[in-house]
Length: 324
Image 1: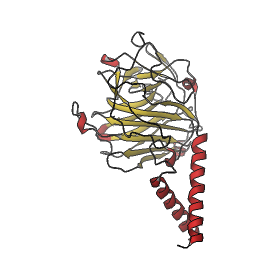
Image 2: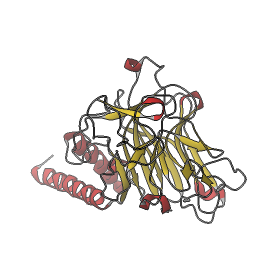
Image 3: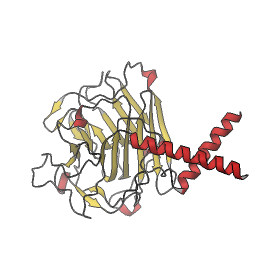
Image 4: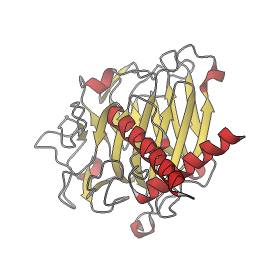
């Protein structure tokens, strides 16, 4: 490769890098819960409030005020901070990652506040990211949205589930504003968990669920295997016949939930808290746009060595396509 080609290659890499960084800067983050409050092994605080009463212990670092509350302070429905994390630095932000959270009992769940801005959003496109070290078991919901009665033909379903299902599958499921149900579910065996209490056998995964209005896509990054984000499921929602695939804000009401509120570590079914997400949870981010793979939290930062290698591959692929 001569000097001029090297220069053109470097310029191309820089252009793509700057484009990626620009996109990152403008991506619309609705809520971002990092669980960095700590300290290690302390319970997620309730600030002296009663079980089930909202207390903003987990801050929304997006600045939008969509904070998160544990149901109880430790015990049966609480969480504690742990030092096990998917990576010590979040590649896309450069932020230190010191803590995750783990359930302290058998009925865990965190939730957003009624009246918070996130309760009413109905995004035409969205991205939900979460890092998880899952415990074995069927139907473990890591991010959900409360609702009952929004799905045409099935009153039991909530508005959204990002969850582990049977046979070590990973799934994203949601109801749109037209009442249509959409889901993308991986093959069996892609998302194994650890058997309690053998936490040392657990492994971290970074997950991203993306709806661009037409395609519902699910990506999984096996951290230990070093796979990077792999597309494990995708559904073409245009085949459903729905006139509008925007995410519903839900409907219904319960004694311990309100429609449109978001949950972390539990789901909702038939209007009841269920599908507890046992295990470790970290870095939950919700965006009202369809992010690309290189914008996910644990994708290589565009300016890093690995990021440049991947970008070079993208450029080479584009050049090859042009020459065809």
